[in-house]
Image (cartoon, rainbow, N blue to C red; front, side, top):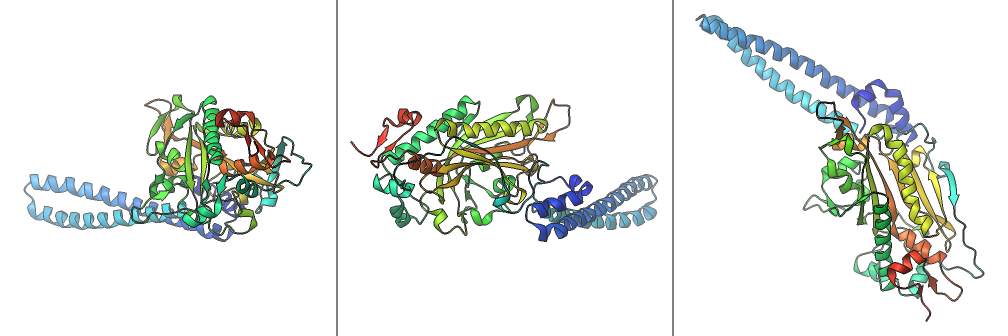
Length: 429
């Protein structure tokens, strides 16, 4: 979340951020509400300090009078002291309540976009920075991945829907081995770039979801285990970023870089139509996540490094892709700056997102209370957190299948994957 000091000093900038991110209806009221609650809290704290000072003076005076054996005079002060303590207790509760209401309102204010982020409110206003690789051309009619997967018995969409529901496919035989090979490949590439591998929990509590910003903004996108008050993770970002919650890091240890493979679970409420067919949008999918903890002054340089790390597997797999700088309205609640990587789907002739690469600055860290300092005697400051998919598997698999289809209907894998699967071709003899 944002610092209350920042909001006090920059109310119009925060209102603009709310408008630019598509929360214009809440902007004026929400910022005003936070500032009003903050003023109420500060006023109560000032009154509380005055009463505590008066109570301390009364206690000292009572002691003096009792030592002088002036019990009647002391009794008046004792009665006054009891009244003060009752008022102090009431004010403490009121100040605490005002703080809780202020902080609840603070959680609803999004991060402020970086100055380099284009202002816009629709995907059409995202900025295409560059395209990499050449789109394939075919001398036959290319098929979409769901037709190819069915033909080669790689993925069972309908049986997954029977067992669980739409968006929960089975991967079979070489389809399952391809998934496993991709996970292994992505983790190895991350390891080469200095990311420490982690196997995190697949469930998170509400504090963890709140820390990374899934709550209170994305409840409708998460599954919930109500009995145990846990959430199946929508991304490894949630547990990995919470790894250092309520801790103080040594700045000499920064940056800290982690990679993690996990299944991800997303309800994706409201997602319907042709754009969700096949692997385009799933409720359960595999992903390798890259997470970084950085010094504040180096986080935007780290963002560019993280982008390059996310691009690397796409380059090595020979998949055409493009890099988008996301506009304010298409960026998300918690990010200050975000890039998307989209791979070309040859069978659908459209771009598919396979990674989002984001700098959250101190927004998540402030919620997590994750700080750093240069030495034990120095002041602490909030770290900056970043993450990016490196990569999400379903649409990578879709693009691989579609791009590498042959005229005879077989699929030919890139050499990097053939080495890990022990097969080069799917289909045929």
